[in-house]
Amino acid sequence: MEQSTPPITREAALRVALAARAMPNVTLPSLIDLLRRQLGDEIDEEALRKVTVTQLKTGFASVDGEEDGEDIGIGLEAMKLAVRILWGETQGDDTLPKIQPYSDGDMPGSVRVAIASDKGDLLSGHFGSCLRFLVYQVSPAAIRLVDIRDTMDAEFAEDRNLWRARLIGDCHVCYVVSIGGPAAAKVIRADIYPIKLPDGGPAEAVLAQFQKAMAESPPPWLLKILGVAAENRLKNYSAAPQEDFLPGVVDDE
Image (cartoon, rainbow, N blue to C red; front, side):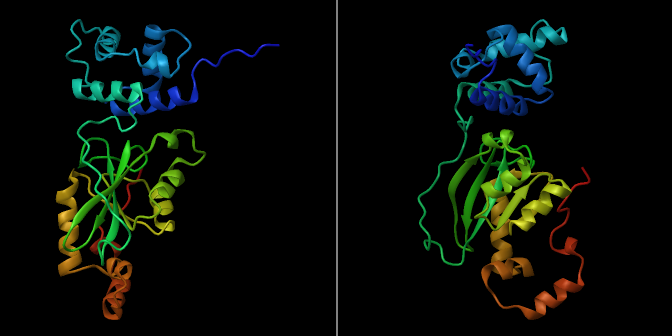
């Protein structure tokens, strides 16, 4: 008996899931429904290359009853990003910063920091749904982007948060705009220190503040990472609430 072709390939499913995340107010079922109307029931990578911004704009507008598609709560830039993702540009963002060469030992006294990002060089992502992690090597004197790690395959992991923690397992610190309690526990168990900054911002501006803390007043957890003996500081840390050093590590979500 001949096997039937699956209605959507694994790679196409990954792209569709990430494209839905890239567009505000768009759910995965609604995007799948639109794509099936445009492409037919069988969706693969080649079919997704035919999707245009205009198709997304008019498709979602017709569902919302908008004639021109200008006021559907998604935004043109988000739709452009979604189309790039559907086309298979896994980074999906032409505003991404350039990775710089780095070899172990290049930056003595440095630590590795992951930035959860959905756009360009911004800290803008939630841990469990960001499109990528920007990975920086940071010392008191320099900041260097050493890698960009796409999170596409997290969609098919049994434990998505654990998969993401392992993706950045060589990092010491992870900045996010939001992270839930269970996810934070997995990040911490991976020996990564999560820092939540709800307002986000340019990655290098965030890391400049991190640099300042490294040079002027490193908290005990950072001293430990740097291998600095600081018994008195650690004693003070153990007696103080964690929020003194890292406000808002987790959400109640």
